[in-house]
Amino acid sequence: MLQRTLAAVVIATTLSFSPAAAQGPQALIINADQGRDTISRHIYGHFAEHLGRLIYDGIWTREENGAWRMRDDVIDALKVIKVPNLRWPGGCFADYYHWKDGVGPRAQRPTLVNNNWGGVTEDNGVGTDEYLELARRLGAEPFIVGNVGSGSVQEMHD
Image 1: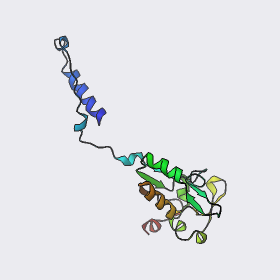
Image 2: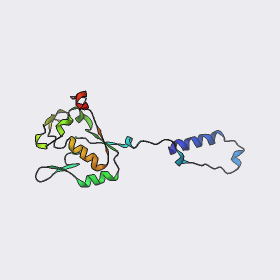
Image 3: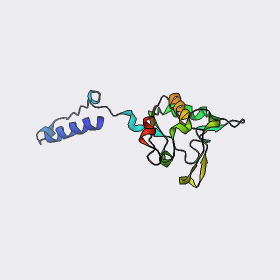
Image 4: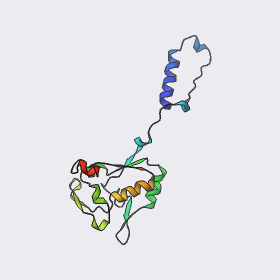
């Protein structure tokens, strides 16, 4: 908004400029607090991608008993930047991910092979339930991506 206000003031000043006016001191007043538009904080959102180590061993890590837990150091760092929304799942994984596969007891969740990443097996150890908990802990709004590769409209409706 400041840039738009500044541009309007500069244009108005330029249009009213005359050689006679150049003789005296000139003033430029910017009222940045009087803007009428606000940029939505949601354009600065983030996404959680399963590629590499962002999810597994990034945000989540395995305890000695094999259970996944969120890393407090990562949560604290993300809180500092005030993530407004968190898109899940990120990237190509969305074309394979079925949100229902990531809810409930982890031991009962199905696995899938992600062919986009060289046949990596996804065990849904970090799934929809964990994502929603992450968004809650960050104070971010959840942004759930629809599976348009192997899912259905009914799946997203549910």
